[in-house]
Length: 69
Image (cartoon, rainbow, N blue to C red; front, side, top):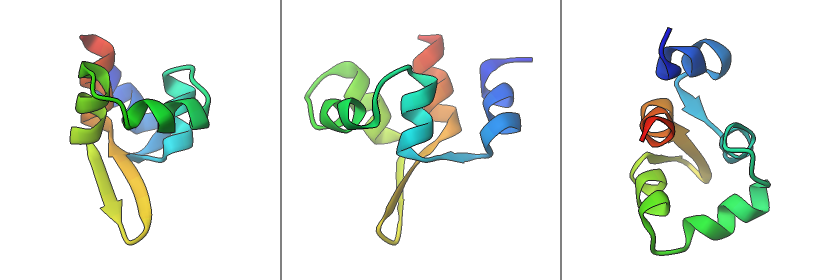
């Protein structure tokens, strides 16, 4: 089983900021700050960002790609 299907089985297709922070072993506030930076990791995370109303979600495919790279 690859990383993407493993994450989908556990969390679903969209992840909250807190879930992404848990997966990447970061604090939610630290992850929020690093999303505002201009580096390769934040660019990949921001590309996978999806806003639904006022809530921010992240696509599992983008997180799995980040972990694999």
